[in-house]
Image (tube, rainbow, N blue to C red; front, top):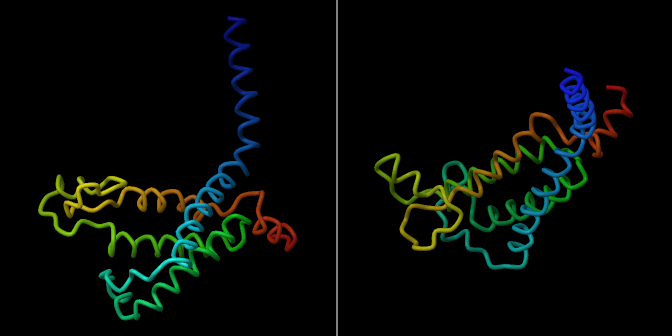
Length: 170
């Protein structure tokens, strides 16, 4: 019985330390991972050629000329990456990047055609190696899932957002 009590006490001790670390580390890791991914994509757009003219964007994004869409995507990916890295306006940039990613899924990554759920599931992959028309929406979908905690919980304690909020007394 003594051994069980010691195990329980040790478990409680570990959990208390994880609770403290959990107020800042998970959000920091998510912010940095998302900043890296979106920043990399944004800088590729900044230094690359505009392939948006060949994409089919959903309404209302189809109303914008491809050059404006390209510029907006580049801006939000680069500025959003820096903002996420520092934890500045994290919720705003999280929702902005979620919207951008949803548009990217529907315009680029979603299957060209599908008649059944099993065909739709075939697009849940990272690379469309065979170019078979089933798409490749797994990675952008994972990005959306990774941005959700930042949207709902904020940037965490190691962020400019937290510093501003603590200075304002809220």
